[in-house]
Image (tube, rainbow, N blue to C red; front, side, top):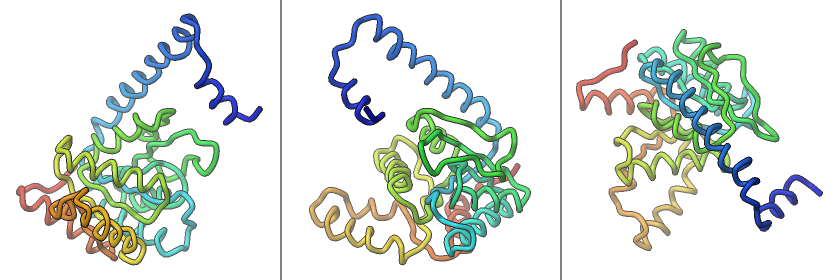
Length: 235
């Protein structure tokens, strides 16, 4: 029996009270410990921007180099960088932050493939999570903006999580920057032609993010956003 088979079968099995106490109830304390550890470490990091993107992007590829440049320029403008702590775009983000002598945070998670620590995370800012939802809370709670590079399902999950929380006013209207108009164009065309056309979102929702193609454009959008509030990051 594969691990997937076991998980599916377990969902249809009636549990005894002892099993509930042993497995489900005690999991609460593991979840609590991840929240407490995250809050304690990340509350001290200062202004940071989360960079999302694919774990499969290789060094030397266009978006890897662009992510590194974005991260470097973020540090030169007073921001730290938070990534998922793994390879690909995440590695590029931490590498750029490290090169810029800025704060470089990694929120790692244990996965059966793709995920492993990259070497560019500050040693005291490398956190490990078992639960995706706890990790996502940390991204949102301690970020003053979101840079979204090309990626897969995980990147889309993080993007729409941030948009939904802003749309529903659960968090402030922090800037969301999608990097790569060629990559994001098809998705945004569908959002307009289907979601907007059928009334599932409003025209105002399309203003919750900005699409750019260069690192300078991304940084400019962040700086203009905070300039409206007479704010700028500093450490």
